[in-house]
Amino acid sequence: MLFEGVDFTVNPGGALVLEGPNGSGKSSLLRLLAGLLEPAGGNISGGGARAYLGHDAALKPRLPLGNDLAYWARLDDGLDRLPAAMAAMNVAGLAAVPCQHLSAGQRRRAGLARVVASGAPLWLLDEPTAGLDAASEQLLVAAAAQHRADGGMIVAAVHGDIGLMAPQLLRLGQ
Amino acid sequence: MMFVMLVGRDLRLIARSPALWMPVMFFVLVAALFPFAVGPDARLLGRIAPGIIWVAALLAALLPVETLFAPDLEDGTIDQLASRGIAMEVVAAARLTAHWLGFTVPLLLALPVAAVLVGMDGATGWRLAQALLLGTPALAALAVIAAALTAGLRGGGALAGLIILPLALPVLIFGVGAATPGALKLLAASSLVAVAIAPFAAAAALRGE
Image (tube, rainbow over all chains, first blue to last red; front, side, top):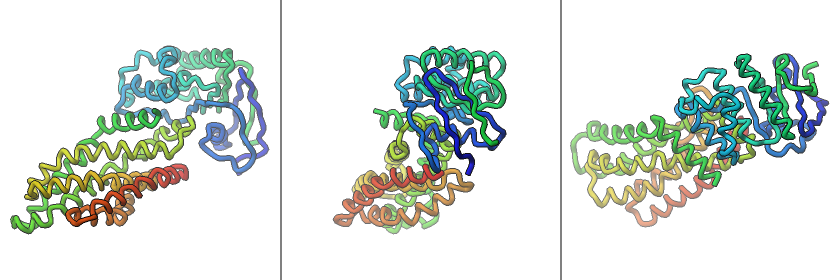
């Protein structure tokens, strides 16, 4: 059993930060919320559409970034939101670059742009700041604040503070 | 609509990868090798020609197996699709459609070349084209099942071959016997069964990862 007795609610506009040492189940809890794993017991309710940012960027090496993100945006029915999302994550200038030439930080920003463009009320972010420089972290903080101001919810697994305003805290692995 | 988008994406990725022309090159090369291996006896070659083409087609269908699901599992694409609530059955069915289109169309285009190489006459070639059209969905379906089962395993491609080849026997038998009355119907039936089962089998395998 990875963890048990975990109980929380995230309200519209709220944010929940998952903390804990490596292997304590932060990523697994996010995957549960994303519907990628089935809980051994208990239940998860509500949320509606969710946008999941995992460790892997899910970008195809040969496709230009703009092309790749547009595919996901079409799946999310949010092609009109994509340009603003790419600008918000400062990847608009990389639209023509094949994904194999992107750096780790750029891939992370691209993954975040996909989350922003999804329009999903619930963001599930697994270490969203991994590989990001200070300026990019600020972009994430701004995007997260805007999302919550619009009534969105965020659950993020983090190491250290990522600058979310007044988040709830859940420590795993105690 | 979503299905069309998934298929379109898969086809676009196939078009940008070696998966488009590799199987066809392989197909033509295998067909070109046989006359050298069997000798220049035109009557013997003519008799075994459909068999040669079918084995070549089967091997060509196997080639891209490692690229069907393994990269998507590794880079998180499957997670992204699943977190959007898209059923794995739909993903697998789209992959099956794209894989079939991606290797059958080039294969049929290359068939006249291969037919000349093994000394096949026009009528036999035409019948073979029909048989290939009816039988290749089954080969694609088997490839999709095996790809899903072996994705994430080391040496998955070789294992996939071991899984597919015995299951492909009925297709091979009905395909080579296309001249026999009823063989094409049995071939179509094999394809129907394989295509109907494949999305569910592949989805179960992907979810088990």
